[in-house]
Length: 445
Image (cartoon, rainbow, N blue to C red; front, side, top):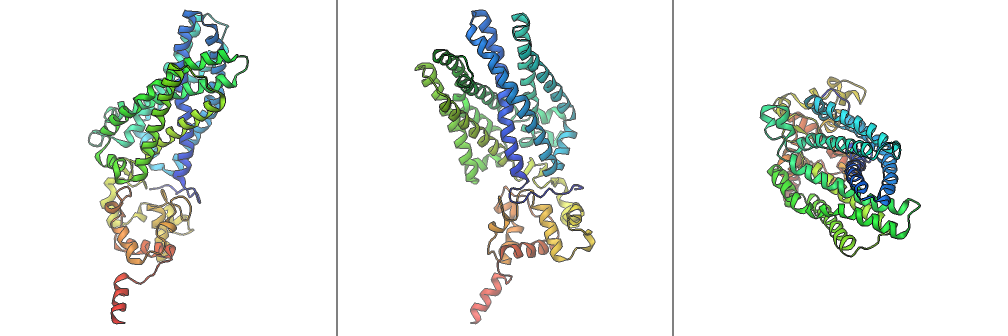
């Protein structure tokens, strides 16, 4: 590693990424779904002469530009900024492996932005046929952006044959590619539909009856949520076995978040079918916002699960969450991780060779643990090992990858193990007397 470690007190770098990413993913999915909704709805509105839906679509696209093109763009930059600081090795690997994929996605993104602005500003200024074509250009380019990003994101969980071949397409069309794409498509059209109900209540100039008809039309796009459970089953049938174990009982937090995400999505879909379509209920602004918040939490839950079940890797079976390549473990076990992470010493104002035992322990902690743990904040190490003895800490370090599967193994020679054990002991407030020594003393007394 030739990168400094970004220390975010209390929150931790991973939490910063999570907060930005969930916000951005929600907006990005909305942008994709809104493009499809607008293109399809405008096409049929012109065929039927439905002036109400045409008038609403103009308002809908204005909010799309305000929400997606501004907040989405800002949060997208935020993701690149945060992942580059927290996981520079993984970011570099993804760029080098998929440089042409990213370049293609950025072209589609540029077309999406340009088409979106043209679509809005040419409303009532060009013929209906030309305007619908522009709408479809926006919809297709936005969806193609999702198609490409989905390949790269799903690769991080299930590289598949890429691990042996290192071929672009083997990694891109990986085992979870298709179920992941279907799940994201369902999420996209559903978020677009929920925003229809919100915007119909926010926009001015509509009677209650007109709002009701708009909401009913948008509600039909929520029906695919009923497929969330079967498609999720398909998805988890394709993930690596060890990752699937994390959501089927090995990590209860993963299980709960998955159940919440699927249940929330399914309930919103059932509400749309029975309430909006069969019963033709009216949804007020407060209910619309509540549905939006439920959808946001469901999206966040599913993203949390997708990220969480990759552990202990950030790129499955290729790179650990602390940035160490799996193929480097054997060498670093002999040479020590500090030879790979010189910046850990620089952060303390010295060189690796000048570190004393306490400083070496801290440097090793920074290199192997700080990507996921803060000192006393989110996932704080002090609380996790509070009052642990020296033996307990050493045992945990020696068996991390066996007793806590989602954690990378401790890497390094005996001296490194001793140094980081002593450093963690200073944080735990536990006894520096071994458990065996304590038992011996008790026996003598």
